[in-house]
Amino acid sequence: MPSPARERLFRLIMIAGAAMIVGVMCIGAELAARHYERHRSTPPDYVPSIFYPHKRLRYGLIPNLDYYGWFKINSLGFRGREFSAKKKLGIVRVVCLGASTTFDIGSLGTDRPWPEVLEAELRHDLGIESIEVLNLGIPGATSLDSLIDLQMRAIAFQPDLVIVYQGHNDFNYSIPPPLHQKPSDLFPLEARPRSALTRWTTVHSLLYAKEEVRIADLVERLTRFSPFGAKPSPTSPRDRILGVEQGLSDYRANLRSIAAIARANGIALALPEIIFPFPPVEGNGRCRVCDDLSAAYGGLPLAQIRSTIDRYNKVLEQLGTEDHVYYIPTGGFVPSADRYYHESVHFSAEGSTRMGTRMAEALTLIVKQLTRGSDQSSTPTIKGRHTIS
Image 1 (spheres, one colour):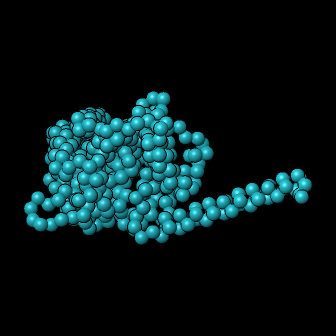
Image 2 (cartoon, rainbow, N blue to C red):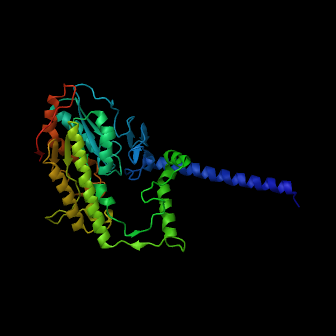
Image 3 (cartoon, rainbow, N blue to C red):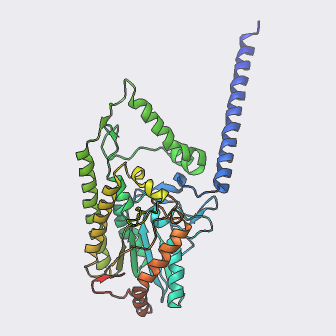
């Protein structure tokens, strides 16, 4: 019979060996995940490791980050090449605020997001290089996030023109889920506490970052049907209607505030209509991304999605009657065909090129006007009511 000391030593060796095997497996899985992310054939849709908790915004983008060759975040914390925070004399600066449709998550790698296409097209059309277009899009952001971003960051870049392309997330987030539970946090809007170790692991482990939310969702689903979990209750049609109406009301208020801040700082504001790949009204053409719209927006009928987006765009059109504001109808900018969309919301590379090119055509006159005052130390004043078609 082995002595107690030898038995303890044997157990310690077995535990150490098992821990070593688990560690090697985790390292191998991490390396495999990173290799796949860098060499995958389609752009990544889910990139949770690029965010960090921000003092003012819900989250910011990690500066100086190269996401496995797909895109880069510069030292100022937004997508694209390096820019000086202070605008140089003679430069006309355009700032694009929005969410993943502005960040342009469907156009990665060698494909250019539409703000970069916009910059190149404006320089070509006007025959000058002194135009900068900054992409401040943050995936997942809403109009409220863009309002905060304009006040606390974008204004410091001294923009002559701000483009706000928002509405997808405002609408989507306003749709209550089919099932809801009583919040488990102490306060309804309390952010989920995260330890320093959790934050560090999210940033430095792609495998953990990708699976963290999925594991949490799985645990929630399991507890939902356990004897100790909170019982789900169905969301009534009335609750869904009220949620959508509240989302539209908040969107209107946030855009009005954005317009007021831009006007107070002498900044021109451009508001493009929200683009969705709705099925063609005429003809027999069909598109897969059109069919996926209902699933992407809480199962709402396509007719209700269309009518709601029309109301969102009506808000933009009404704001276009105010001074310093340019309303941009986008009908025909990006057609409803599969090749123009990465999926039911985001543009493909071809769609981004169309968006940037058509946006440049719509904005050429206003940017040309701005260049007349670009040799001054302050932003030129733009007055009048505008609809650009």
